[in-house]
Image (cartoon, rainbow, N blue to C red):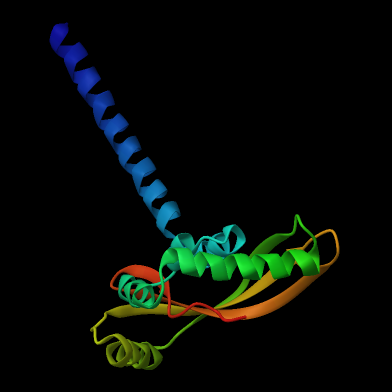
Length: 171
């Protein structure tokens, strides 16, 4: 009788293990399915908070390091605070910035190679760019004084296995 119980417990253990593997697979797929959106989130989170450390997470490491040779995070934060102050004046003190990705277009391999060559020239570093998207993003800025929606194109690239913007937007 003890042997039969052991067999039943082991049989249930296999089902539990299979169930756990399926759950982990689903979790991994869901967690990694929209990673290309992360640079956009970092960009807008950093802008909204006037926090260049967050905003610069949208860039590849080598681009971030190059920017920090020009100015410190503190100096970039001052510039972002000036932008926020201008926006408060235009939209109202408690304005919010919301974004929505409304279209996604794959970037072809020829253009990916071209961008990799640009990085090589600009930053003197070789990169592996495996994917890229042109994202059309609706940006809504809403405050007590006014509300406005604009569309911008953002280009995101999977650079050395990390999704990044090529550069920060100057809008």
